[in-house]
Length: 292
Image (cartoon, rainbow, N blue to C red; front, side, top):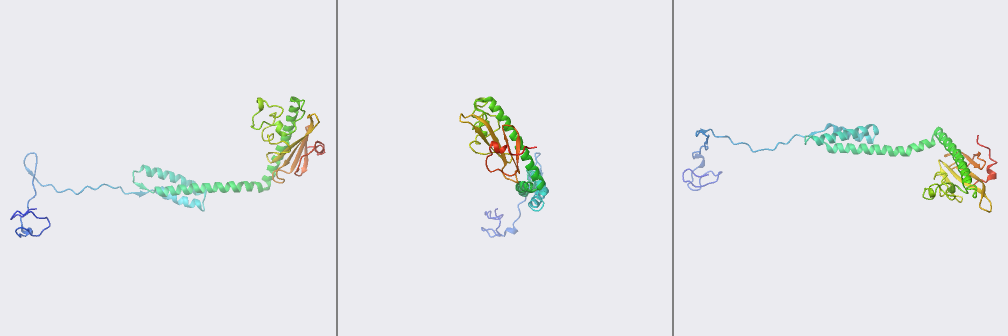
């Protein structure tokens, strides 16, 4: 600003002119500069506008995020799945609502925490179930007896299947007679049939579980809670005129109680409530009573 008496330039906040010493408060005030309209007449001076301020929306916490967090905490203890599933559903819905709200809603962290705790609760329940359920099934007397009876029936049926495979083998390879072990009746080591239909070494007459390539020379086969071993009565020329196949439970009192055997006569015999530790000869098998 300038002094109205001497014209000296001075700062806006001084009380007196540095040039002539005139008091600023006593000086006449400069009227506001008139604003002229396009017609040439002076218009009233316009008031100064306040500085521009950016609008910031007021954020609200999404109620679904709060609900997801609370249910997630309750899913850990004590409600488990009853709270875990709603926590996951509310968490996903809340995160979607917050993303579409354009900053109006908040609470994404709470929704994410509810989701994590809900999924962790489900994983914990599944882990406990995977450990506890098999144990319960093994220890429940009724279910245990049913499972052992099913294993015993499957073992007797497997012996019938092996007898049929031996009969087919003897017809297909008369010079060999009966197969010496289960690996001969099964597929090759790779699980594929040599030549498409098998040969005298691997006839592909049994599936790989009961007729595995590893079930030879006194090595047991395993299937449905039972173990299988076959021995053959062979002459000096390598031809086998008979065989004995034994099926015995892997764990007595758990996977089964009865042992079974059969020979070339095709009769399945039962050896009573015992697990046979070794092989059974043709003569010993035929002393067992037939399965009725």
